[in-house]
Length: 447
Image (cartoon, rainbow, N blue to C red; front, side, top):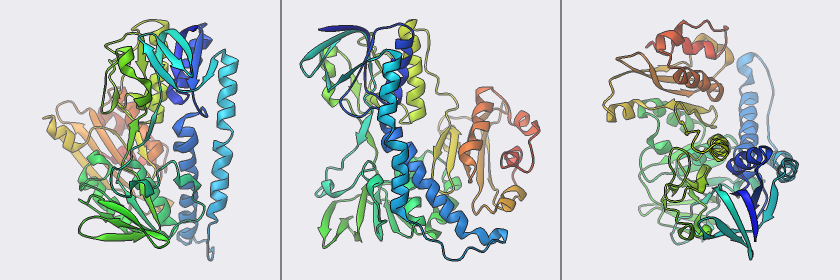
């Protein structure tokens, strides 16, 4: 049996955030992971995806270079080289993280952890005990329990595709579905996105804001199939047939993008007295299990927000609470989110629809900024903004953007919301011009 002050299960963003900080603070810390450390974002998520997205963005920009008086001729892309490039970012990660853990004094344990009691786990026959145990095991692609469900590729596998398919069906219009839908449509793939309801991104953004974005996607080759569930997937010659009940879509590649499930089944949480729900482990505002104060959870293991920056933030919060019990609460106020379509979609705060559900009187303004001077000069094909402001106070409750700059400029709204600024105060700031951010000064006025 080995004893530690802190035992972290999972080597992704959340686990690293907790382990490195507690070890550097002098706590005897161990990290358990059965495979490569680094996490979903670095290995099979944000970073490699952004390499693909950026390649499709550049392809689009070059094809539209004539707007700026530039003649390019025919433009092609070697997708296999793009895949090679993404590996230059992902392949070194496990070694780099292992080195960081070693330098910080973290004991590395390889294997799968299973609770044997409230303060201990078994890893391949070795029992480890700790005063604090952090669960940061991440998530895995949720499988569809349908005939032929095993024939569907997941977001983990799509990074190995070296030749874009001619026809692709994506099941799910969430973040993953939209991002890869835009990427492969830009490459010339016929993309069909099938969604069980009629709302992309889980209905998080307002329909009036999203409608032109969906129409834009159709123009570049995305076909939307709303209010349909996949009944079965079967092989059809060299390709696949996706059966929807009232129709069948033939394709060469099927991507399962219906979401991710918390990777907690192997932990045997009951042995630790820890409760969990459909989204993952139940935690309080300190990211601690209410049923076992020794156990914390970060990232997708509890699933409040399946975002890698949030997992990193939660790892930091947990480390503070381990070093000084119950000293730091999580605060998800003004959490910026970005969907890396082309152009990207970004948001913060609540939607107009959510404000109405909560009974909050708001002034909501939607603007098509495509023709505004800044975006017209840049040659942006699509630029939109929606702001949601509390009528009684003038405080900003939410913002939704779609423009090439959206992933960066959304932080202006996030910072303003964290600071409690009103729309008038944000409007009165002096912005460098002509920048994409300067256009946001007029985002609260209807044009």
